[in-house]
Image (cartoon, rainbow, N blue to C red; front, side):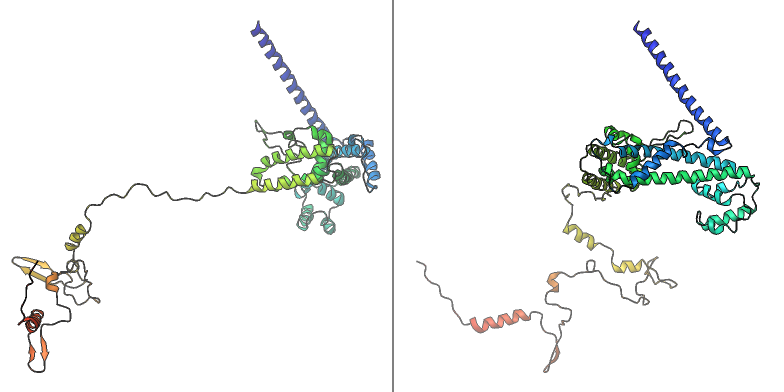
Length: 464
């Protein structure tokens, strides 16, 4: 029985999910049909109804009324203050103005392509496009308008517009078509002016309503976040993880592609844009937590001067600066010396002396060499001959150096009393050259002994 209940529950869930998906598809289909109908409409007044509406005009009049007041004072609960309610309402209308302006520009591009189809590719900004269309109108020669177009677009673009207009494939508009297009241009310019007026007012007042919030992300971003969240109290009740998705635009992706980054109002704030792109997601998490804390402080009228927001801003700047730093490079350290004890080497001084004794001498090295282009001397003994190499060659500039370790050595006994500058011949004024005896020292000692001790006697003392 339990398995049957689980099966029925699963079927009910699938049916509900299918109904939800069908509802979403129907909403998207209706929105697409509305956009198509808006583009196909003959008059812009049939599709763009926000600017002349009573709600829009009422908000603009109230903004003019409160903007004339120098100071803003909030008494009691902030949610019940009329000016605070106006700020929230004006911020919501500013979001609708963006959609309305996009719709008007699309209608204008579709209908003015009959006259100048190349202008859409030359001027990409929607507002600049509407201003250029209003100025060009139905004129064919645009060279006199170049100076006026320079106030809207760069000089190079204005020259391109003037040159392209001479070769365009468009036709001239009728008076009725031109009048409708001019009305659409005026509406686009009016929507932009209304949006600038609303944003300027909201930005000037948000520093009083939410001073700590404004000190963290700036007045413009704070006004958008507060307006989209539904007020400062609604923002204070939101969890920090939902703040980055405020103001995020839903984009239809192809296939199964999805956008993993929440690019809402917070993502485009100056504080987040100041860090590298690869750490902006982590930076949003840091700022979101402080943003909710600041909203709770502002909702309770705490720190009206915004001191707490400045403290949060300084903390975030330090954290983001540290987050943006590249990782430290680790020094490549040499391997430690091994702890193995020194091994005992066989041989030592005795073996080294033996190697030096039988090492190759300089004479043998000269014998193994041959001078270029010269015949070497040969020595024959018996039936064999041996080449002498460069031994005895006079062509070498330097004499061969003799290694002291391999030269022949005399015994120390024979080297006694013989120096390099000493000779066994002596010169005298009486006999001339004479060969003295080699035992000179022994003879001198015998003569001295005979002189002093020859007639001497030795006595022996009696031992007691």
